[in-house]
Length: 306
Image 1 (cartoon, one colour):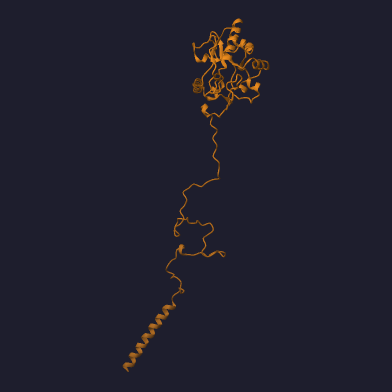
Image 2: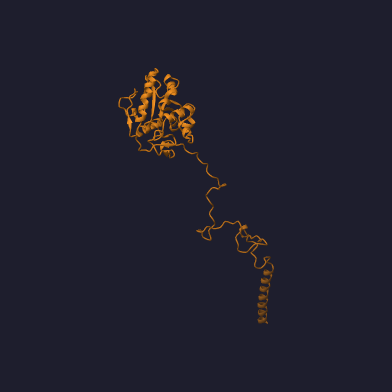
């Protein structure tokens, strides 16, 4: 009887253990395959439902794309360049005014510099190596030292100047030469001095760029009264000497090369002291019509602004 009792007791114990295990499984509220309720989830671990039209494994439409040298698992680096606005052209700087005669446009070189009627102005220049071959010293009073090269004129012009001075003396007008022929090197030094003093633009209204000076032709001369007052200056206008020259210079083949009110054509201010020899026929025609040498030849006017 004792053996049967032990067997039954053992069976009862096994049965009770099975019941306990069964009851423990039935009391759990977590569904199979789900995380335990006691383990919290973070927002990063939560997933959002994909849009109905989303394409699997495709990046968002506006998502930044990796650069060519970026590894696939690296996030694109933010740009450090400032945002660019609409493309605009930089403001253009105004054209710089020339500061030296070397910066001026190339001029037309005259074909016949030895002609008595050669036209030299701000648009037409003598060849750089031109030098008259028939220079002489006219026998007239000068304000210059004796034998100065600036006393010289070409042979025909020198003879005409002697006649002009003699005629003026008969009328009680005593004239003196101020400056006639100027070598190219002298004109260059003179003009550069004026540019340094007054600037290029102003200097060009009363002095010639080297190669464009009539004095280099040997056919031009500046004159004054014998006392030298107002020599080659604006106060010479209105003097008895200036009035006589305006009335009689053309009789001897000379013209007032830069007459009053014609600076827009000649390019120079009024110079009643500047005589230019062109020969009797041309001088008479220019005087009668009250025109300039440019107008006589019908060339394009030379602006004093250029």
